Length: 154
View 1 (cartoon, rainbow, N blue to C red):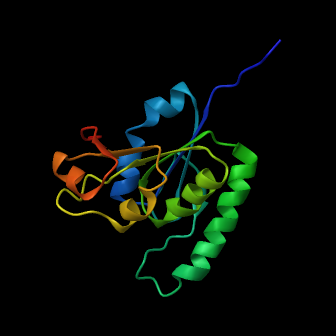
View 2 (cartoon, one colour; view 1 turned 120 degrees about the vertical axis):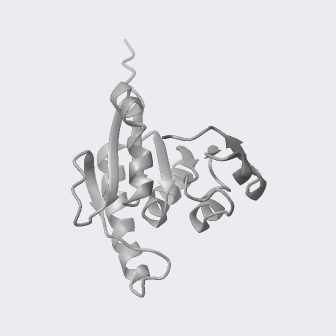
């Protein structure tokens, strides 16, 4: 007898607007076996199961924080064994993106709603190996070769 488990979905994003957008996918997380990862901030994030160090490209401590986040991502990966990584960005998702590429898991990137007229650094970096790259504005399609318009999450 073969026992198939439900797909494990890892939802990961930075805090703020990216996190708010990702929360709109809660029904998907409830339908399958989903868990949420975000940055540790002063704000309460009750749905998050795991927390990463908050960082961005302009942070002078970005490299050491990304090393810590990469180690945390690997521990989460081993514990949860996700089949899909779904993200709205930004740098906190990058270690999960690399693990998805390394372990041949599906990676879905949803470009942020806040960037209708320009690409994001995260989007430019993670588009290459994304299995599905969704934009929330038709105008964003011109910045990415793999983008499909999916409408807004709000």
